Image (cartoon, rainbow, N blue to C red; front, top):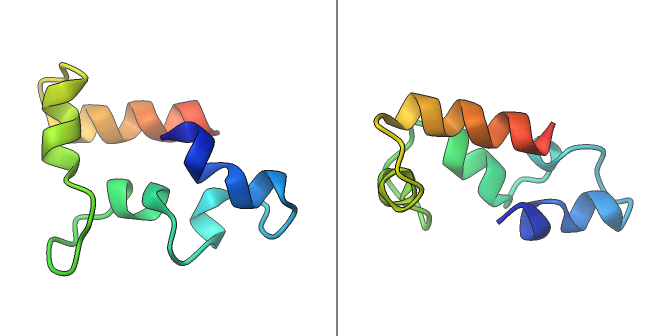
Length: 64
């Protein structure tokens, strides 16, 4: 996930994944449920986090 979210940064198109409109990073950190492709709740369970906020904070720290 990090590799994909960092692609546009490595390409020099944006400075941070949050700057790319279609990034998974923005969707993972968003509370938006409608028209979502990524399911943060499933990712939380996959990576064995107890709550979504902790997973989001962890992912944000990994990217930063």
